[in-house]
Image (cartoon, rainbow, N blue to C red; front, top):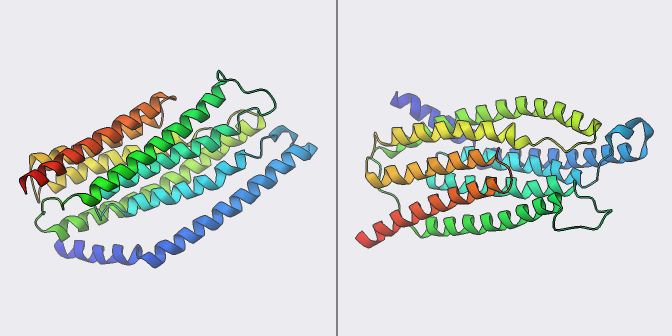
Length: 290
């Protein structure tokens, strides 16, 4: 078992070395650029060619497409970072949710009618305001979390740490497979819904409920699995509470993906605050006992 984990650990390090990750990044960025140009071209044809007249949409909707590719890459980095640190993994979750919120702005702004006077009672305008305020607050919370993390002392040592890290690499690899499988199946479903929405000139379907909801659900179970496995190497009340707070945050973030505005942002802020406060209190305890 130990030799298998050691061999897999070496394979994982070879698979996700910085050069390979950079190659994947460049591929995704090029796909994002291509998708952006194609989406703009399609909207142009829709608005100017009679054959495509059933698909007329605002050019602003094209901004949403490349941002979705960039967000996918951030989720991939979230999976890759699992073996490094659970605390860094949670910080990356904060980043992903913040970017999902920011992407919502590009999704919602195309539904705003610029041809009429704006009113504070306009639901589309209120949605944009929610997106902007929420994303700024999430950015501030994420920066504060990383500040606490960088200033904190290293967590209690876990004996046989290499063994535990190897297990996390196995989980990371499995999550990568799940990520690509979910993204492939969800993309097909989303494209069909997108075609129907464009044909009937309705709002674009929300991909958060299709892909990210399922993915965050899987992450919840992965978090619980790693929490239980970590007890084999070190067991303490404070570690239980810290890691449990991270699981609670993941659950709240998952719930937010299918909740209506502004309830979804309320769930996100509760999740952020719970993890940050628990992390701060536990690290403050370590400093006091030093």
